[in-house]
Image (cartoon, rainbow, N blue to C red; front, side, top):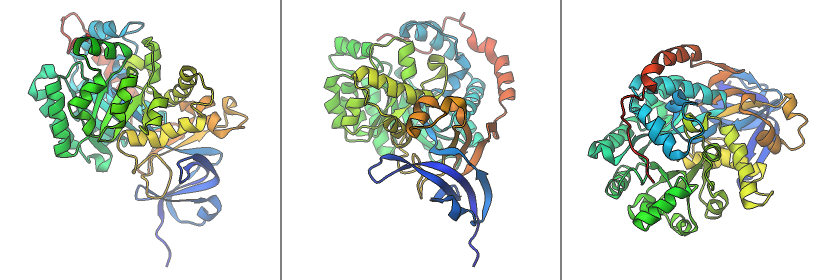
Length: 450
């Protein structure tokens, strides 16, 4: 009996693998067999030659990696890329970003996220965790363009109970959406904009409905010190006493995590993860970065992120991977930390775990969803290759991604986007700019004062 054809076979290629100790390795002259959006096997290219398939990709000379995960961003903010430059955090929020965001319409959000998804797909990102407003529009774009996403409707306590209720309604309405590509979270903004009563209520709702929480906390050292001065506790201690650490929680940034916070994070009852977006910390001249090594020693996954393009100017997770490795070497004074293979682990399995998808994506192995990117290392900037892991982390660029696949569906082939018309999006966004950027109204959606 002739076997039914696979949906997709990618061959021949070199495949990034994880052994039973999760050490990163590479399988040469390999093939990836995909059926119904799931990786059926990783085998030799010779064995795959005679297998029937609906679609085949000739990946000769390319490296197959698990799709990158952007573990914390505000995708629609690509519309504000470059609008608030060379400012300290407080002025960035109060004088520019939060006044502009008071103008946001659902149309602005939809256009922004469509452009962001195009940028991420071209950069090898197959999943992103978003924390923003008008998230129904974001979910609709995710459904349309084929990417995977972990979405939460952000809220402040200044909105009253309605903000928290809308965040819950969004999470329940879209959980499992887009054929399972959408997962959801409750999304209080941060301990400095959401009071302890709301945080405790959020923790209770998370436990009741089996939802994770995604929020900013201890983003920088100033926030931690301001919280200690005003309230006698750090932002992480606030999360502990409100029950947030009893839920599955994704903490954005955490560059202000103090030594006194580490035992609380280690003792958290839920699954705790931190997303690091190092380019923004450098740009804001924050004195510290996410304590990746200390978190690693506690067994807490640190996923890679970009934050929004209004602060980071790009959604390039590849750059986040390289910067994380370099900044860790500098801050620890140890050139052996992070190694390139450790950085690839953060980019793959740790990032998948950070967004609650550690059993779904993050490695190229049987049973995982087929979220795969193919990288071309034939350019002069990546030759010769003496250490493949080092070449991928420190020499390759996101523009070396040739093909991006999510759930077995090709979203970009040979650098051509197949599900998003970038020119049309940019044209519409330009028409919206005057109304979006107006600040003469004197409004802002919130006030930053830490």
